[in-house]
Length: 386
Image 1 (cartoon, rainbow, N blue to C red):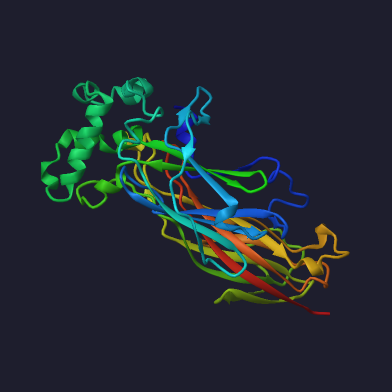
Image 2 (image 1 turned 30 degrees about the horizontal axis):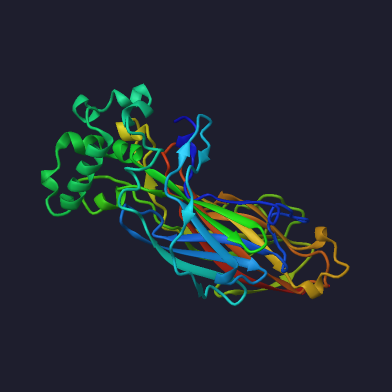
């Protein structure tokens, strides 16, 4: 379980010849190639029997529901190296439809139902479920609970979760003590496969667990993951160039803060200034590491990570070197926001670009933790000062 604890659910990997070649940079979107921006699951985690809405957002070449083939593996096995392998894959029985995210993207959406017995049938939760738990954690579970079979334990969790919100006092104290650890042990990963016409394949992971069934019980502290929010953005123009790092709380140079109120950013570019873009995120969940479930720690906030994508007008790219295009780097966290360095285009032929910011959450040392994500689009318009 060493490596599997660090696995983050809902990680999106682009594989295959159709998506492995990026002639400029990973963040660059090319108009003649379909490019996944985000898989947004609502909710970010589910329990057996729940219905989930998936929105797949693409940029670059337009994508329609007919261009995509969907499959699923409800049973993921983790090998001795901590790598997920899918022992069986079946067509995903869905009705995908075109969904509006923005005029500059293609969005395909559909709902699917989590099978009632996905955890019971999951190879990631072995029949001898206690043998898969390191001895330190295994000995923390009472002998009575360790004697239950996988099926018996799932039946008990299902039964107690159905009545927990109605009669929380009926929950056994010992069960209440070990529940956070047991919910991690009985988490089933799954994977959805999307093949874009032409050979481009996307693999997206998701996790199924019972946490949400106990979330409404005030006597319990059971973490449930939600999608992060992108609350607001702002541009900082700092009167110092070059400037590699910026913290608005400690910066010694004059700067101007320009809030981003809509989806269009009018940016006056002064080559004597350094530019940064700040992103404020919300909906920060707390969670428990597997150690903390045994009382060796307390709930901690998750971490939010950002990724920027940029697409330029193809007609403006003639004779413009890739190194002269606008670039937004990965961020640092300062003054309560994610600060990314924004390098304006060095060629004045570029009058703007479309940008997308993806925010995803992460938390270390939680077994098969579901991952949430969110996406926002901006349109930059540049005005260059002499």
